[in-house]
Every structure is written in structure tokens, then in C-alpha cells.
Length: 183
Length: 179
Picture 1 (cartoon, rainbow over the protein chains, first blue to last red):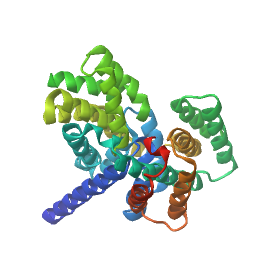
Picture 2: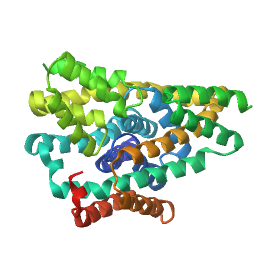
Picture 3: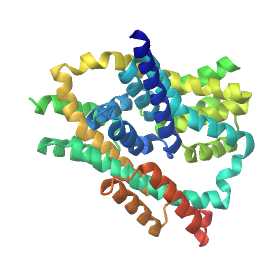
């Protein structure tokens, strides 16, 4: 029995690695660019997280060191199968870009100056923007559940927009607001 | 040297909250100003490559600079250094978060945080839209990509591939190719 269980855990760890490698391969643009892929793979396809759990991880990621992509991979991996799960997911998300960077650094540093490659990015850049917009839309729909939420959203957006307030500040203040107004 | 690489990028990983472009000045100060590993001009080239390659910006830069200094092993050591602080901090948080999340006060805090996260992401859409050098008609691609996800639930990977093919076929014409 223990043997089969271990086989199951091993399978899950391999799957975590592969799914996060897929996410790592396509998240061009860094930062939130991996959101749409996490949404598709982790939330919709595999049901490893709910959209709210994922958004909570994003909030935590903003306040901990390092890139959001790494943080979410580590977190999801740990949640699903402990320490080795977090190692597998983190390695998975890092490996594709690591290999690509090695190849570019070794052979063609100027690859992004080629006409054909530039043309490809002319298509990719607006698509990344549209995908991120779709991710934002879905998070708005699931995260704002009442008028208080609309209020916090507007305060946060306006302070980011106008005052250039630090993101950590925005999260801390909204947490305090949440404690005060949600009884 | 390997130890130096690891420490330099562990510092980068440890002291940049929120990731993304917040890390660029820290990398520059560690690698260009303090240690003189890379010239300023080369740093800008590396930044350009790291931005266009999939994955996290800081990780990509650490892989590249590590490779420049000490080959494949250097790249692995630098990347590991950059990943380690966020890996460890999230691991610790993940271990305690479940019990932490059961506390009433934390749940209320997250009720407030969730709409703010939506605002953060919406704001990043605005920022990227403004800064990503998209020429006017190409914004249609963004609109189509958005609609395909929201209304048809198409796989974003497929959308990226289609957009890349579209760019390759139709993106060469006009004087704006050089941008």
C-alpha cells in the first residue's frame, strides 16, 4: 500500500514539475505575465487552487522577497505535496528560461535584434497585454464581492495611480481596512 | 568566485520585495557598480534579452550574468542564489499559513486585501499598456486576445502562439519594424 502511495506522490511531483515548466515556457514579460497561464493550468485544468487562494498567494508574494512566479510555484508545490513538491514546481518554473538564456548567452546575444524575431514580438506584446487584461478581469470578478470591496478596489487603484504608493503599503492598508469593516 | 556569485544574487533575491523591475537597480548595483563584473552597456543588452525571454526578469538576468562569469556552472549557481531567498521565505510561510489562515482576524484582513490585489493587477495592465511600445492597430491583437480568453475560454498558450505567428507574417511591414 505504502508503495502505491509513494508512486502516486511521485506522479504528482512529476506533474507539478511539468505543469510549472509549461507555465515557465510561456510567461513572457515577467511579473504578472504568468497569471493567465497559472489561471488556466493550476486553477482551471488541475483544480489545485481556487482563484481566491491564488490571489491570496499573490498578496503574500508582494510582501516576500523574489519574483511572483517563483513564489507561487513554491507555494502551490508545497500545498500539494510538501517540500519535494515545492522543489519540483520551483525547478519546473525556472528551468525553461534557464535553458533558453544559456542558449542565447552562448550563441546569439543579438537574437532579439533580428527582423523576424522583432516581428514575432510585435504580435506577442499586445497578446500578453490582452491576456493580462483577461486575468485582471477574472480576478476582479472573483475578488470583489460587495460594495465594501468596490470601495477598497477604488481606493487602492487611485492611490497606485495618483500617489505612486508602494504596493506593500497598499496591501497593508487594505488589510487594516478589511479588519475594520468586515465584522 | 562561485561563492561570490551565489552571495551576490542571493542578496538580489533577498532584498527585492515584489519582484519584477524592482530588482533591476539592485542587480545593477551588485554586479556593475560594486563588483564590476559587467560593463554598463553590456548590462543593458542583458536586460533586453532577459525582458524578452520567458520567465522572471531577475532570474533570467542572474542566469545570463552567471554564464558570462563562469559558464554553465556559474549560471546554475547564480540562478540558485537568486531563487533561494524567495523559495525559503515562501516555504516558511506555506508551512504556517494554513493555521494562520484559520484565524478570524486574518480572514478579515484577506477580505480587504483581495480587492486590493485586483487593483494591483488592473494597474499593472495599465502600466504595461502604456510602456510596451505597441503601435495603434496592434492594440486590436490585445482586444482579440482578451476576448478569446474571457468569452471563448481559449488556452492562453494557443493565443501566444497564434499572436507570434501573426506578428511573424504581418509585423515586418512599415517603418515601425525598427521599434
